[in-house]
Length: 90
Image (cartoon, rainbow, N blue to C red; front, top):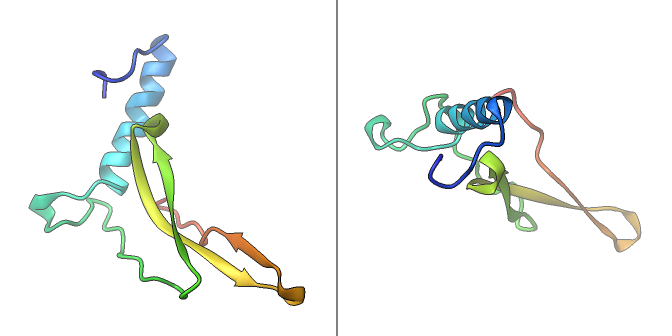
């Protein structure tokens, strides 16, 4: 991570370190764990045929997590999009 970011001060460095640790345990898959995360994030199935993939930036955009974006049809033919409910491990 420090190959790509120049920390501005100690507090910035600590925040980047905490963000990386969170990413490493909750989002990054590990071959030694049979492509699971240490936090055992479940595999998300596509909720509906109207769902699209969205990217969630991690560590200031150096890495990303992908999830489904739900498209819900509302009255009058309009579409509204909302993110799936966040869990404690997101």
